[in-house]
Amino acid sequence: MPASLEKSQFLLAAPSSGSGKTTLTLGLLRALARRGLVVQPFKCGPDYLDTHHHTQAAGRPSLNLDLFMASVGHAQATYAGALAAADVAVVEGVMGLFDGADRMRGSAADVAEQLGIPVVLVVNAKAMAYSVAPLLFGFKNFYPGIRLVGAIFNFVNTDSHYRFLREACEDVGVEPLGYLPSNPQFVIPSRHLGLSIDAAVQYEAIVDALADALPQTVDLDRLLAVTRTVAPPPAPPAPVAAGPAPRRIAVARDAAFTFTYHQNLAALARLGEVTYFSPLADAALPPGTDFLYLPGGYPELFAGALSDNASMRASIAAYCAGGGRAYAECGGFMYLGQQLIDAQGQPFAMVGALPCATSMVGARLTLGYRTVAWNGLTISGHEFHYSTLADHGLTPAPAVVTNAKGAAVAAPLYRQANVWASYVHLYWGESPAFIEALLASPPPVAQPA
Image (cartoon, rainbow, N blue to C red; front, side, top):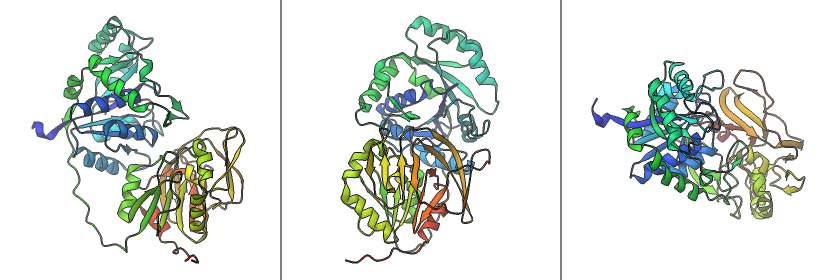
């Protein structure tokens, strides 16, 4: 096969969560980018925290590859299109290699098989030596649809420890590619289910420390060599259809609202002109807004600042009261309510566009894939939140919401006038029909001067 048709591309997976694959992914992204390579990051599954960190480490937007929220064809086209402009693709897996929404469905192994890319296993070897051999053997041979080509070990502090691990690899036919030692400089604090996004965390220093250390104990040249494989051709560009007059779409984006899918934003950009604004720092919505998107995030961490920005709260409240079209999900949903009650029970005034309050008191995790059937449409997404709805007068829209097993769950889609809200992070990157339906609602009522 001509070398010009091959690129280094691999999926970093692990036997289980907590093995350090995100830490290793971030270090590899930065270390490879330092070599002058264009490195394209991807994330298996619905995670929007890891992609945030990937983007900073690689200098390119990280894209989600999720086989529950979207079709195989969409994932393949997303991957091929982004890889075409890059030298290397690094795909971070989700949970354990074979953990999916339903057995293997949507797992990292499923993604690797559908993309036809090799797998590199990240193993927490802190309390393991030659006994890693049967673990590697099992992961290599359990499912013939994937190709496990190498292993990198985490929490290995001596060359003698690594020698046992290397011998285990050689005896089962998995190439040993190196290790990462334990180091407090490499630790990124966790918040909720993912990595912290706190500004106080010296994120750049941590990633740079990882990138400094990796070439000393991981054979990057060999990693790139054993993962070279045929690059899929990108799909031809879709014809651009003539559309209505350009819409002005306002998207909240700041430290409080960061949970977005890059493909969702790209779909919005095809429907109108996207303008980003900050509910924390800006005084009002962008002028002439036709559609407002308030994504998820951590508004509870910034409840005081969001509440203090009274002019922005008033601007959004007036827009919604005047019939403005809006979609708010999870953190955005919390922001549109009357109050946000923090974990200590202190209430903070929010926008007040929806008759509800949300509370972090006694926070408990609600998590899982969701499929929403509404208005003749079916759209999938992911629910992930700790807050709960307090007193509210919201009316659910006539939608049926189910989980990955097809069982009904209580995750309503609410509607008030032209404002829709839900705790579910919906994925419309493959088909914008859901957003188009919201845009088809009656136009905003003109406000008096």
